[in-house]
Image (spheres, rainbow, N blue to C red):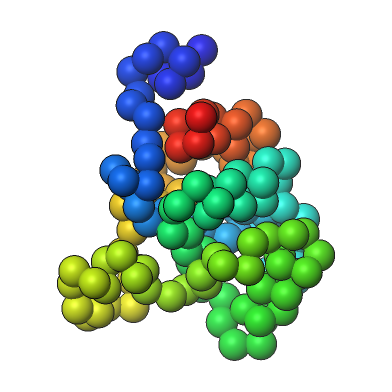
Length: 136
């Protein structure tokens, strides 16, 4: 049983956590740089539902230039990612409060496979848990 199921975690909403930043490689799909990969089960659906429910979602990645454009096209055209997602862009919510002074995007929460204690995003249960905490 995870923390949410035990009632330890509190439900998140776009009012409490308006901006979600999600790392690409290793979090949304397997890292296969410079190639594109296949999104992990539940990742695209969860991200799309976050956007639909009012979260501002930013995919942040070290990829850039033509490679980033290829990734965007693959995620949107091939895998159905909502085209309203941002890639390596600053949040409208945070820029309305703070000046942009850094290349790091501001967010309410960051999902990143390299973070200390990060879950295994390739496990479909991870995206199911995120869905329970942020969407249901």
